[in-house]
Image (cartoon, rainbow, N blue to C red; front, side, top):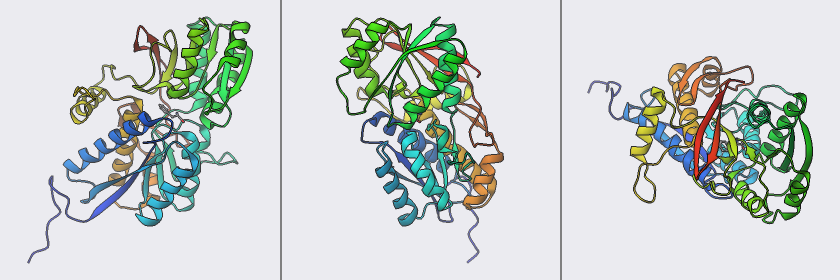
Length: 372
Ligand code: PHE
């Protein structure tokens, strides 16, 4: 019998390519995991519908990495050693992506995180780029700069109070970058207090904020903590606006508690751009909420979708299922993504505009876009 021609358009003929998706499906921030899983698997499905990549079907292996170092490391070891993957999308949280990056680079497995913004995800302790790790997002140096600028120029803040969880690389880093840019621009930090991710009662810190009367309170943590703190702040009568970063982005952010606040983010689903409109439409068709309505993709979903597409497009352009060649192709490539046009700097990080979102009257709405 004649050799089978490569399948065009339909089911791929020649085997499969596995991609691992490490997502925090359980643990403190489950909406981050669900959105990531949905965004990444939508990208895989769209490629498979067009015939896969390199004539092979793409198989997504989703693991629950919990936004926590140990489970993330276990998941990375499992997919590399057992499933033999050469490509990982994830994690979401910087503190989980950092230990995963160590394994990925040791095993020469390509890692692309959509959303881990801490600079140490892509840089080693000596400040050198990790050859196999990439992110599809701006980093916290950029994000901290924009938060500081927004505080000064839009909120007209002269003083700021910072709250932080020092055990969270993302929170700690973003707080530091905010302080650096805010003070360089003449702002004053009137208080800085730490808490832990296990805390549920923030009254001691909030009493200090009430006393210090800052123009703005900086809380660069995830939505679960933001909900608790802003609710208790309102109960205490604190009126200074709270500001934070991408970690606030969740359908489970409590908009009543966080009312009057602002946060930076990677994209807005209401942006009038073809790539965004198509993605929002396809995502809404693929995924429904509890009431059966189309879900609106948050930034986690958009960036997981972008990260997965960048990876698969690079496999396609590299022309070979080879991790080293794929990493090289990502580093040199240009990608049209939902979150904007992406090229990578020497630290495997895109230069992209930052979106500012306002929490007002029970809703989160686009406020502005800042090119840092
Ligand atoms: N940037 C966060 C981190 O590095 C993760 C995150 C991204 C959370 C986008 C929400 C939205 O830990």
